[in-house]
Length: 469
Image (cartoon, rainbow, N blue to C red; front, top):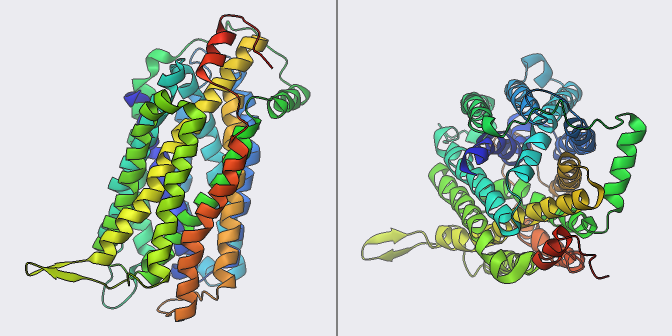
């Protein structure tokens, strides 16, 4: 499980740096309008989403001595890393024109997302196949999620200290070279991660040349997708994922602006705060297995959502009412204690604990319904189920990114080096960041309540018994 989860090092460094820094890079360092930046990212993520099901069909039907997953994990992973560097290396002649800049960023993002699809879908499908135990699946996905957050802590969060220190009065996030230095460092580590996960899981390669061949045309692909979308068992997981991910994406993309403009954290403070969030997410991921054994998966998702909502609402309450102000500190035994930083870390961290529990639990739900489909049809469609699940996530991320750009525009956020935001804009930014996510999570809970799969139902289907309606 741990060896497989090392693939999340590359996933985390690339995915989380794009989610966390791309909007800042486009707007503050390159001067692109938030609306155009959000549109470029949203289109690319949407392309990523619609290409996932095709990749799932391809990997399920690949016949190779190296198996159905590993060739794509290796080649797709290396392609992702190569393109990733050019996402942050923008030629000077492009920077001088908003129109050229938009089209360059859109084109590079589309290529980047294509590589992510080629790597990501087979990688998740491999995880579905590594563990067939109902509770063990949550543990596997929890370890993978915790690895993602550990990398996020040591990579993304530490970036604030390593690459984004303010220098000579210039805001560090307004310097394009800072992002490129970060990208080159992450690219090297990601290459090592991809090579290691392929080597470490080589024992799980199954020669697929002898597996039954199925018709593999466009019509067959569309039929597979129709069957998955119409499948009763996963439909509520898909719906829940789309809704909750919109809120999470809003928070993830706007929180960086909150660090910069509302809380006005320095580089070390941003490392502590962002790193604290990642620790909390990882802690939640590791707790998910034990909670599932106690509360079942649907109950665990309910608990996770409540934890997340309470943390974000509480932080919004103390900041928006100025019960705690950004610069607040107090002397304790002659030592200055940063009260605002501590409160922010604890309450914002609580929001991410809930999400950390939620992510591996819902992913393991998809592994369960993929097995149920195999029991009913005799065909392994782990890649297709992983792809459609990824599709639902990325559609939500695309919508969330688009909305985040619109939100920044609506609240009057101005772009450009050295600009100071109006107090009213900063206050609205705080409200939008801390209230949008939990409100969307409340709506998502209305959907997951209909999810029918339990441990008993899965065991019943494994024994060949017909489940009760």
